[in-house]
Amino acid sequence: MNFSFFLASYANVIYEFLFELYVFVALFTFRLNRKRFFLLRLFVGLAAMLIIGYGAMVAYHFIGSTVWGRVLIYFVLFLCVLVHGRICFAESMWVMLFSCDMAYAAQNLVYKVYLTVWCVIVKYHFFPLGYPEFLYKICYYSFFLLCVAAIYFLFAKRTYKFLLHRKQDYRTIIISLAILAITVILCSAEDVCFLQLSSGGENRFDNVLLYYIRQAGNLFSIACCTVVLLYLSGILEKRDLQEEIDRMQYNISQMEQQYRISKDTIDQINIKCHDMRHKVKSLIGDADSSDDLDRDLAEAIRIYDANIHTGNKILDVILTEKSLFCEKNDINLSCMVDGEKLGFMREADLYCLFGNIIDNAIEAVKAIEEMDKRVISLTAKAQGDMLIIQEENYFKGNLVFDDGLPVTTKADKTYHGYGMKSIRMIARTYGGDMTAGVDGDKFRLSVLLDCGGNYVRAKR
Image (cartoon, rainbow, N blue to C red; front, top):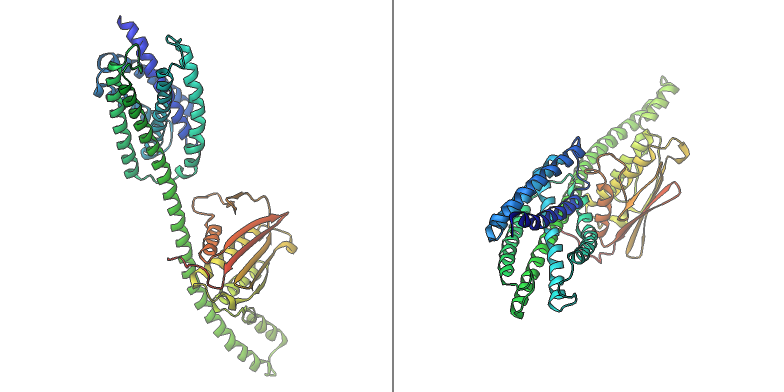
């Protein structure tokens, strides 16, 4: 056989591999931030990869029959694809390495799954000997398209929301790369060995023992690639969940600190207003005091009468603080809360729960111009061992829900939207849950808590 024939054979191997790898790279990088002139960078890079692929074909002719030769060829091709991705996307090297790692694992997984099935087909003669090459291609690429769809829904789609704007854990990626490297080395050794042992064509074995060894190798590769995909996507999701928990815990701790500040402030105000009330009474009895002065002084201490008394000192501080803000911003805050039933909650949880509920409502109502709709209604009452907290307010625009929670309307969604998540987390901590919904232009929130103590308090 001449050199041109070998190049044609290797072109089939190298360019098919690059095509499949690029399909999965596109799958895992579709939503990444792109650099300027993305299409130009993409197509120039693809042209360069065609040239690099030709060089790989030549290298395959000389060293492709050895294990380390094949490993070197595929490593260089993977590295070139990684560099191409780095040129096209405005992401860190770790994000690109993560995406390309997932793509390479997916490509190898799909190929090995098909090879396992194909060995069964050849072994048991489901296709006649001497089948045309195009028949193999039709079967393979039909299977390939189905696998691309499966990989997208099982892995790629679920990693999109976790991958963007996340700091990558280099240890996780290095471990996955090590697993893939072992897989590639063993697969290369297996391919070289069984290519020499097969008879009448690749993956045809007269000895049934060789067939089973070959299939065992294929299954090992499938297991390794599946582990990489599950490990990377699982670690990413777990880390994202931990970041959410950390932010919610930080939110609660900040609320706890804010409660202490608010309590001290309101206590000081109450003391001053109490003293002023007695002074006003004495001034009113003074014949020289004017009606205007009386009204001004009475207005100055009206803040003292604005205090809300629910039977729970912590809740009194929260609601008084929020009612003063609402009064200043022409918002009507209506509260019917049995605070005595909330004594089972930690101070930080109580402040965070009601603080977030009212703050979210205020944020929505402030955007409404109609005065009759700038209203917030809050009730909390016990029914048996359960405590029901309900809040209603009008809102402007459209609300989109994700996982039962309204999506934040603020531009920076990375660090906002944790108020509702904190509410739900606290509710579940106390053996309850939270539901939210809309009815026309009215938002409704319901929080259910176990006030009978029939729950296991989460450790903080």
